[in-house]
Length: 215
Image (cartoon, rainbow, N blue to C red):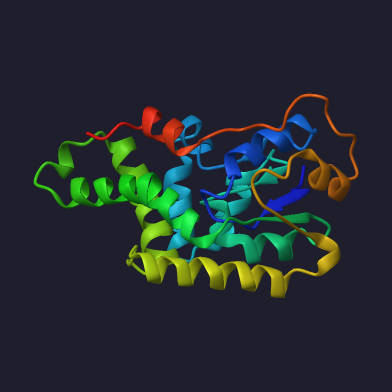
């Protein structure tokens, strides 16, 4: 099985909703950051990829028909080259709103991770959880944002990434969508019938906060 759909958008642009939508349309399973909770051994493999050992991604994504969100978006160029027939979906959001959502959710979580890993009790953290924390912070904070999650810098990185995806992917392979557009553009792009059920709505800021309360 090879990837038929590759997500080019950063987290907090509707990627979890897109995962559920793609799976409902028959493009499943779809890889998303939440898959690492089901497959904790993947954390070490993604961390190795972040250190430029790029051959291991095939092992991680074996059996998946689609991949969206981090950590897969970290190697989006590798994936679109490896699967030249795959469609690419760039999920977008107003940059200011994207940052505010990220600041309250994933960035806050990563800052908690960084503090825990640097603290005196770091070695007492469960090894599997510690590996996940290191993977997430390495790929997202260090490699994607250069260690700087401040508003202006993060938005510059976000905008530059989106422009690079648009510039790199041929128009016939690329769909650019924003949350709230529903099934129509996605189904037309993938040439599949539109479901009668509503488009999935998952992982709002409130959902994220409830699932990962601050500690």
